[in-house]
Image 1 (cartoon, rainbow, N blue to C red):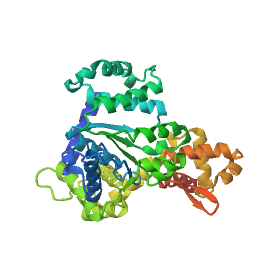
Image 2: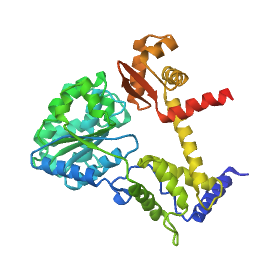
Image 3: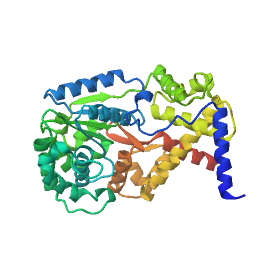
Image 4: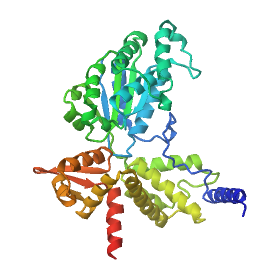
Length: 409
C-alpha cells in the first residue's frame, strides 16, 4: 500500500473511532494550563495563601514562598496560574526551571527572561515605558540574543549580577513587583549551587522582588542543608495536598465535557466503575489521573472500543507503570543504571555501604551517584537509626522487580 494513503486511512480511522467514543478529541493532555483556568480544580486554600502573599508584597511586606508537594501534584500548574494572574496586574514576571543548569547559566537565563518577557517586544525593540534606559537595556539584550541557541557568550558573572540589580532598582517601577517563579527548585540542593544560593541571600532581599520556588516536600530542608540562611529568605511554605475525591471527579468531568460531542453523558466514554477505579487508584494526583485517562482512551482507539470499562483502565495503569520505569532506566547513565539494578537485587533498598560492598566500589563513588539519582527524583531515602536507606521509586520497582520475576519463571 502507498505509505501516504496508509497514513491518511489510519488518521481517518482514529477520527471515526474517537467519534464513536463521543469525543471530539482526547482532552487529557499534560500540557501546561497556560492561563486557561477551565481545567483547574480545587486549591482554594492554596490560592488564598498566594493571594495574601501578593497583596502584602504590593504594600512592601515581601514574603518569599516555597510551593511543595509530590510529583504530579500540580505545582507547575500553580506557578502558571501565578504567572498569568500577576502578568495581568502589570508586574514583571519570569517563569523558569532550575533543572540541569550551572549557577552562571541560571543567572544568564534569569536576566534574559526578565528582558524578553517584560522589557523587549517580540520584534526585538524596547518597550516605550523603558526608553530612558534604552542604551543599557539594548546592550544587555544584544549580548544575550543568541542565548537561546546555546552560543557561548562572554558575560562575567559579576556583570550579570550588577545588571540584574540595575534592572530591579533603577528600571522597574516602584509600584510593580518583579516576580520570579522557579520550578524544580530541588536542583539547587547540591553543593555546586552554594554560590547561587548565597547570591539569593542578598538578591531576595532587594526591594520589590517576590520569589516562588516549587519542589518536593523536602525542598526547604534540602536547601537549608546546603545553605542554612536560605530558610530565612523563604519563610513561607505552601503545601499542595492530593485532590479530594470530589475534586478528582471534577477534574475528569471538566475535561470530558470540553471534548464531548452533542448528546454525550457526563463521564462518557468511561463507565461508572472505570471512573471509580481511576479516582481510587490515582490517590488524588492530577498527573496520574490525566495520564491514566489518556492511556485508556488510546487503548480504546487501538481496539475499536466504544466504552472504557474497569478492565481497560487496569490495562492502562499496567502499561503506564512499565513504560515510565523503562523511560527512567533509559535516562540513567550506565553507572547509575548499575546501581539501581543492584538496589533491586538487594530487595529494593540499600545503604551506601551495602551497595559499595555489593558492587565492589568505593562508598564515595556510590554516594555521588546516589545523590544524583535522588536529585532527579528516581529514588527516595529515609533514615533508620544511624543508617540512611535509599529506596527505589514505585516506577523503578515495577520494572526492575518485574524483570527479576520474569527471569525466575
